Length: 187
Image (cartoon, rainbow, N blue to C red; front, top):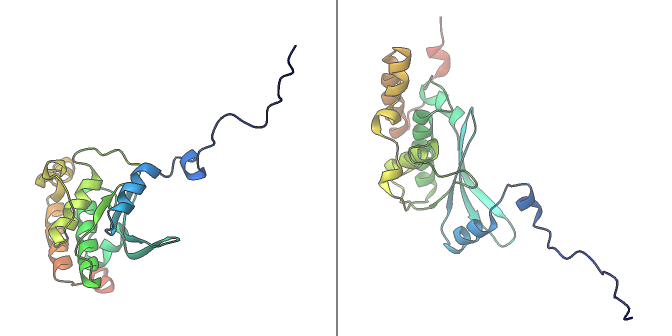
């Protein structure tokens, strides 16, 4: 009888740590890095929308512009910070800040989020496009204008001030006019 060789290790390959934790899709990340364009990173949670302009370096990624939807309060926004109108306004503010720093183009990075037409991620992208940045996209993925303005929320709450607040905040962002919070909160 022939003697069998003993096993010298596992016969499988262990995935990278961030892949095991379901944080990074390396195939998609590699395609984004080969584009050599700044990445417009959009992440959403139940409470906030976060956007970053990220450039890759030899050893790490560097963030040059970052905006969170909680910053909309400085422009007079008093609605929820995790909905579609807030995502659009966050994208608009992000695009204005990125253009001010000198970045006019980018490529969308939604990470592991499932790309659903009309979602908050694409509302944020529409805000970036409306601010004047160039990002490759298909207009069919954007939410309708009624949802971006918050008319669906206003109809549910029977409150038309939501759409009025949206338009005033949009004008404030486009003119870089921050609202003095202490003067508006005086009772």
